Each structure stands twice: as structure tokens, then as C-alpha cells.
Amino acid sequence: MCPGHDVAPSIRHNRDKSNTLGTLGTPGSVFSTTQLDSSPLNQRLPYRRIKDEIGSPNTTPPTHHSTPRITRKDHTAYSTTDNGPSRNVGRSLSIRSKKGSESGSTAGSSHKHRFAMSSLRGIQQPELSKKLYKLIKTENHQVSAYETASRESQSVASQLSEWGETQDDAVSDISDKLGVLLAEIAEQEDLFAQHLEDSRGVLKQIRNTESSVQPTRNHKTKIQDEIQKLKYKEPTSTKLVTLEQELVRAEAQSLVAEAQLTNVTRQKFKEAYDLHTAAIIERAEKQIMLAQQARRLVSLLDDTPTVPGEERAPFENSEAAREVLNDAEAGLRNYSPSIEPIHSAAGRLGVNAMPGSIEQEAAQPRIMQQAEEIVQSPQQETMGRGGQVPYSTSETSYVAA
Image 1: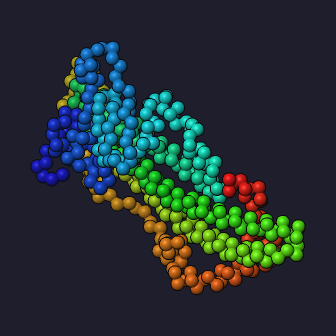
Image 2: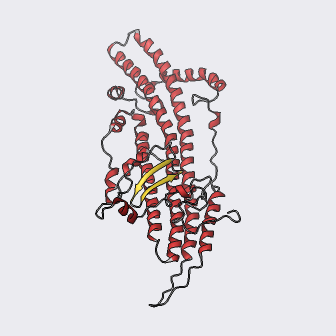
Image 3: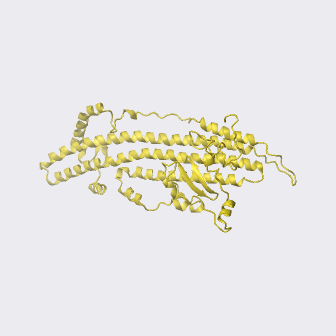
């Protein structure tokens, strides 16, 4: 902190001050001293005040998260908790969070996978991309779970701070600042969910490529089936020559499509899990850093037993507690991930997931020659390229439907 900067010892009683320390905020400029007024832990409205404003002692306080979260593109969200309205600043949210609007024992029922239009999309997926489609869909639920965990952890931090607001100055000060650290630990869950969403988006590119390759395989298999039927019914038909020429072209297209699929799969698989694992490391290192500061904070509380009538010594660790938050702020501000970079040769690929245009043009004659050799090989009549049995006619018709 800058010399002379006035940092209030508590986040509870400084709702009208803009220079006090609030929640730690976003990864780049965390612990911003200008964000306290809009932090989730600062705008608390105790239940006793809610009851006075409502005017009815029997009125049930509002439930957790009664207001749906807004889209991920908007970095501001409003929610209503048991302790009154709060405003989350610097939070990237998702409409998927609506699934976790209940808390406690009812939260589990909100994550049941019910039938929806997405279920029909899964049925219509090409056979080649069904497994990856299922993986991506499951990751969607995973991202939702981390977002829910972040919101619930934020609520726990807020309630801890409110609970500690007692006549015991030591408990009040420690619990308030501990709530700040726990809220930032919860924020890391939400940031981790965003990184998982980025990784999931990269995997979608592999799925889309798989879906585009499936028609090429089906077309080649269809021609192979027609040739086999014609050889059985009319072995001397002149149409066989035309079909064999068409099969050569289809085989060449298949070779190109399979090469594109291999290139995209390797590149995007590497990129997706580069993001995924880097996010795990960043989340773990930041949460370890914050948890260590939280342990320093808790250790400042004197728990020496007292006898009845004995007065405790005044709390003298306010400055030390404030210094813990300052150290946590500095740690996050100066954080750099300790990860080993993953090198990639994807820069050599062109826009069509193939090598540069010169290399591709030079490879065209070789592709056609290889396609002719595959078509003319004795195994082509019964086996597909690479020793794989071609798709049956019934399966081809099913996928095309």
C-alpha cells in the first residue's frame, strides 16, 4: 500500500468509504482499494434490518440467489442473499448458473439432466463425433458446477463476516478479514470455470471437423457398396469403370479429409489441454497463496482460556491483520504462473488445416497416385483404408438420415 493510505480495519462498517480494502477482485488488479463499495462482502444488509424494513416479524427472509445470473459477456451480476442485496463486481457469469438457483439439499435436484433439445442434437450427431460431443456436453455441467461452488463459497464468506460482527473485537476483526480472503478464494473457482469454458471451446473445433469428415467417409463407402452390388449383378457393366473413377476421386478427397482431421485433432487437443492444465495450476497456486495468508490471519487470534470475571486483553493485532491483507494483495498482483510452456508447430498449418499452399499443391499428384493404388489393391473390395471394415449400407443410411 502507498504510505499514508488509510485502510479501514473492517469491511463491514465502511460502506461509504472508497479507500478501504474490499474483496480482491480480478486477476490483473486484485485487492483494488476502489472496489470495496461494490464488493459482495461490503454491501451486506443484516437480517434484522431487513425485518425492520419489511415490518413483519413472520416474514420469511429472501432465499439464496433468487435473481438469475446474467450472461458471461457481462461482468456485473446482481443477486439476493439472506443478508440482503449484493453486487458482484468483476465476475464473468453464465446463464447456466440459473440451474443452481437453489441451495442446500435442493441444489442437487437442479443439476438433474432433463430431456431438452440438446438431447435431440446428441442423437443426430455423426457417429465419428458422438464421443467428443458427449465429452463437451459433460464439461458444460462441470463448468456449471464450478460456478455454483464459487457462488456458494462467496455466500459462506459473507455469512462468516456477518456472524463475526459481535462485541468481541478480536473475533470481529479476524472474521471480517478472513471473509475477504475466503471470498477471493471463491473467486478463483469462477475464474477457473472461465478457463475451462475456453478449453471446451477449443475441443468444439475438433468435434466440428469430425462432423465434416463423416460425409466424406459415407460417400466413399456408398460408392464401394455400389461397385460390389454391380459386380455381383452385372460383372461386365460399363458403369463399373465410371464408378471406379469416381471411387478414386472419393478416395483422394478422403485422404485430404483424414489428413485435415489428424492435423486439427492434434493441434486443438494440445491447445485445449494446455489451457486446461494451466488453469488448474494457476487456480491451485493462487488458492494456496491465499490460504497461507488466511492461516496467518487466524493465528493472530488469542484463544487463551479465561476464568469467569476475567477481562481479556484488548486486541492488539489489528495492524498485523491489515498487513496480512496487504501481503495477499501484493502476492496476487505480482503472481506469475510457474508452468512449463507447451511448444506447438501449428503455425505451419494453412487456413484449411493443411501445410502451406506450396507444399499442398506439390502433394496433389502424390495424393491422386496413392488413391489409385488404394482403389486398385485387392483388399479394397472388402476392406477400407488402414485395414478398417467400411461402414455398412444400413449405417450409412442411418447417419445420412
